Image (cartoon, rainbow, N blue to C red; front, side, top):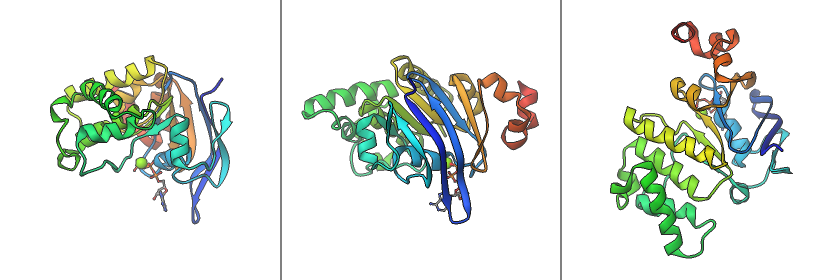
Length: 242
Ligand SMILES: Nc1ncnc2c1ncn2[C@@H]1O[C@H](COP(=O)(O)OP(=O)(O)OP(=O)(O)O)[C@@H](O)[C@H]1O
Ligand SMILES: [Mg+2]
């Protein structure tokens, strides 16, 4: 059965259809890349799925039940966690406290939340910054704290909105290993990313948006060669490098 099913989702801002009749689905443990040019509607779709801004038309189903229009905290409790393109960390809390805030969704005892937080900190490689106030971190670190905070809620679906932007090569490799492990453990990942080398490497399937419309959905190899995708987003240079 599908873990996530997006059916005909349309979201309008005035006369602009930021999402226009979008449909696709995700299975447990799958990594799906969501790509497209700036303004294509990727973040809007995340907001529709996670309840921040419900769709005007269409439905979102999670684990067989309709979640369209439910508030974000309920959707999170059901098992969907996200990061934000414009980071929303708790700036005056430490790195560990930020991650513990996620862990408290399913844990009552602070000691349990702390243990979960410390495990995740190690995995994202920020163990030595655990007592740093998040507001003082560089942006790429803030993004990784958001990934860890999301994972601390033990989601079955993780939505990543440009979480890898700005990471160095080594940090990127660690983050990729972390995402692959998340999926191996059965959590589905829907990842918005402009770093094509990474998205094409980690994704089982790639969904391409342009002007709010899905213009392609396929395995990475075929998406790279899709003339419509090359014209709208990847560019001829990318196709030639492949
Ligand atoms: N709250 C809003 N009010 C009005 N227009 C909006 C709002 N949010 C998004 N839009 C518009 O909807 C379109 C899709 O925006 P969205 O942020 O979803 O694109 P995106 O694919 O995430 O782009 P990027 O790669 O730049 O993050 C854009 O034209 C944007 O200006
Ligand atoms: Mg966006």
